[in-house]
Image 1 (cartoon, rainbow, N blue to C red):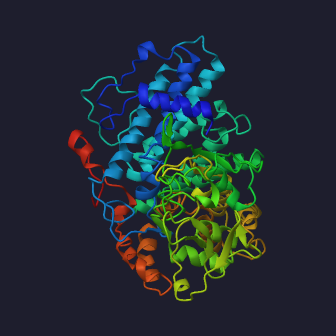
Image 2 (image 1 turned 180 degrees about the horizontal axis):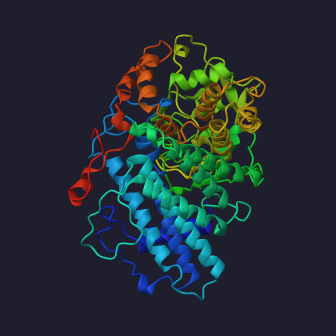
Image 3 (image 1 turned 180 degrees about the vertical axis):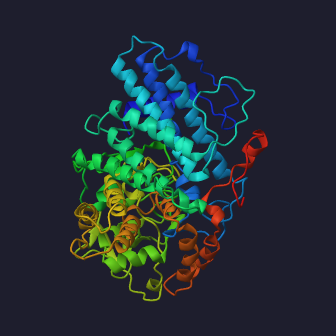
Length: 570
C-alpha cells in the first residue's frame, strides 16, 4: 500500500471519524462539515476515509472473505465446531458477521454522501481534483450499495448524509431502482477517474476498475430473476450487452494483461508489490498494511484466516519472528479448505499451475522440539515440481503414504504468509492485500456475456477464455466446436479454477440460479473416500435452503427501524 495513503487512512480512522451505531448513523460524528473540506488535503483525507470500510475487519479485512462470502461449493469451513455464519449454513438474523457487514457498508455510504455534498465547498481547489474526488465518492457509494443488493436485495436507499438523529426510519427501496442509480453514477464517474497508467498502486479505483465493477453489476443483475424465481425480464439481453461493453472497454484500453506465472499475482499481494512483472493484471485491491502494531495499524487477516501458513506460531519466538520466507512462514488458522470438486477440476484439466497454487501441494516439516523450527517441505504425492529439491536452502521431499494421500481435501493456499516482507510477523494480522477485480475476471466476463448474446460461441469469446487457459498452461478451447450451452459450462468451470477464494463464487452461483443445487450436490462428494474422513463434518455446512440466496436482515436493524421487513425464510 502507498505509504502516504496508509498514514492518512490510519489518522482519519482513529481521530476524525467515529463508527456509527446502526446503518443510519444515529450517533453524530466528531467531524463537522462546516469546519472541514476547505483544502485539497482535507478532501483527499476524507476520501481515504471513504475507502476505509473496504479494508476493515467487517469487510475484506476479515469477516466478509471468510464468514459471509466464503460459503460455496469450492471451499468449506475447516472446523467441526461451527461458527454461526453463512459459511456454516447455520445463520440467523442475529449473526454478528452479517450485522457488522451491514453496518460498515452503510457507514461507507454515509461517508460518501458527506463527501459528495461538500466536495465543491471551496471552489478555489483545483477543479480537476474536485471532479476526481467526486467521481471516486460516487463510485464508492455505488460499490457499497451493490454489495448491499448482492447480500440483501431491496434495502433502504439514501443519497444524502445523516444530519440529525431523529426520524430516520426507512423502508426498503426496490433493488431495480438502486441498480439504475448506481449504474448511472458509475458511468458519470468514469471519465473523471484516473487511468491505471496514472497511479502506481491498486488501492484506489481507476477507470478500468470502475468499468470492471460495472460489468460485474450488469452480470449479477442479469441473473437476479433466478434467485427471485421469476421469468427473465426483457432487459436481460441488454444487461449482458452492457456487461460485454464495459468489460471490452477494459480489454481494448491495452493497459492490462495476464501476468506470468499465475502465482506471481498473489505473491505480489502478500509481499507489498504492485504488478511487479510489469503487466497490470491486478486492477483493484483491498489494501492492507503493517502487522497491527503502532504506528501503522491498517492490517487485515488475509493469509491468516483464508490462506496458507504454518501450523506453528513463531510470533513470540525472538529468534524467529523477524525472519522471512520459509524460516518463518507465518501462522495460519487455515479456516478454508478446498472441496473435492475443485481438486478434481484441476486434476481433470491437468491444471498444475493453478491447482498447485490454490490448493496447498505440501505441508511444512517442523522439528519435534520447541520452538519447532521449519526444516523443509513435504509435498503430497505427485505434487512436487520436477527438479525442485530445495527452497530457501531447505529440502523438499515427497509424501509416500498412500493412505494419507487418499485425502484430496486440502488447505486453500492462494494467499501465502511465507511471502510477507513485514516483520516481525504477527500471529493474526497480516499486510496482505486482497483482490477485488483482476484482468482475468474481465476476460471471463467478456466470454460469458458475449456467449449469451450469440447462438454459438464467437471468436471473441473463445479468444478471451483461451487467454486465461493458456496462461494456466492448459489447452485452448478454440476449434473444439462447443455449443452455446457447453461453452457456458466451460466459462463456469474456468471462473472456478481461476477465481476461487476471491469471494466471487457464491455470487456467481446465485446469479446462475445454481446456488442451492450446487451446495446440496456437494454432499455426494463428501461421501467419497477421497474426501478426508477427518473432514466429513462439512456435510453440516451444505444443507442450505433457497433462503440462503439472500442474507437475513440483521435483527438489530429490525429493532430500530420500524419500516424494515425481513427477507423470506429468515
